[in-house]
Image 1 (cartoon, rainbow, N blue to C red):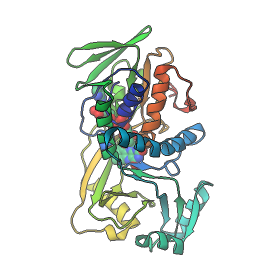
Image 2 (image 1 turned 90 degrees about the vertical axis):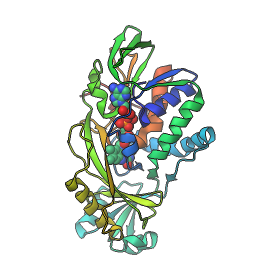
Image 3 (image 1 turned 180 degrees about the horizontal axis):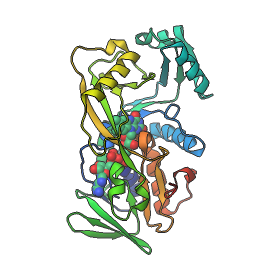
Image 4 (image 1 turned 135 degrees about the horizontal axis):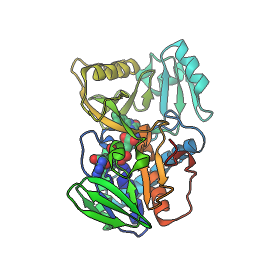
Length: 348
Ligand SMILES: Cc1cc2nc3c(=O)[nH]c(=O)nc-3n(C[C@H](O)[C@H](O)[C@H](O)COP(=O)(O)OP(=O)(O)OC[C@H]3O[C@@H](n4cnc5c(N)ncnc54)[C@H](O)[C@@H]3O)c2cc1C
């Protein structure tokens, strides 16, 4: 396994769960997406089409069982919010746009219903209510996955960077920066935004970094995740995350005054009571994005021992547990439970 973010950890754990041993190469890097993310489970809003949409819905619905599994094996219960996600309208034009694009599974709330549900959105004109969506605390999820990896007894972690992948017949070798070379029947590439920088990972070259800046307000006026016209807010712990920019800044994971300003304006427009005189804490992460915003998930058609699990773009937290299941299916040769054709490596 190359990469110790949510995708690498969930995949390693799923493979270990099928009785196999895993060596996980993971180097901590500034800008890793998994600890930075807002943790929304929002397949109804960050929407795909066709089987990719079905996969995203199934990924969301995989969460409650996954959280129970992690609690049982680690003692850590990862906070999961399944109250639904609101897309609030703040203008007449906003109402029309939201009503036109809402999924049949969502429900329109008028102004009174919205105010009853979320008094802090009393200025909203109505909202689309996606009842099954929500959010997970991805920082606690990482902690639980780390602990579950140790508890499995089948995952060896090596703190080193992989520089090259060398598929050879029925195996694949990994070369590391410190000069080690390890051969395995399968290598899974889950190196986030950096996946395309590894020699030999030709189908990951379509993955690039997209910086997202977030802020944290030490107040929690809302219970639901809420999208507005320019951003979103997510209740987290005893505060609220506001997000986010989507920038091409290469591998620079720093925050900027302009970026934070934009995110604050978008968040405070959704929920004016978030406005504070002090600057909220801010951070940034690098989303591993692909041209169609869908992951690269599957075996290399010419070198099947090399499996790609990268490029999850804006939905990597949502998709991590189900991606892990599918990676384990690919490694063990089990029948795939989902249609991965839209995620095919080499489609770009
Ligand atoms: C601001 C922001 C908000 C987001 N919000 C959401 C959200 O609300 N919902 C959602 O579903 N998704 C969200 N995402 C997207 C989500 O975070 C990512 O899709 C997901 O975390 C990707 O996980 P990953 O494991 O592929 O990558 P990462 O978490 O980046 O992990 C990759 C790991 O691989 C390691 N690595 C890289 N190269 C090498 C190498 N050569 N050798 C060894 N190790 C290496 C890195 O150091 C890192 O640890 C957000 C992302 C950002 C940045």
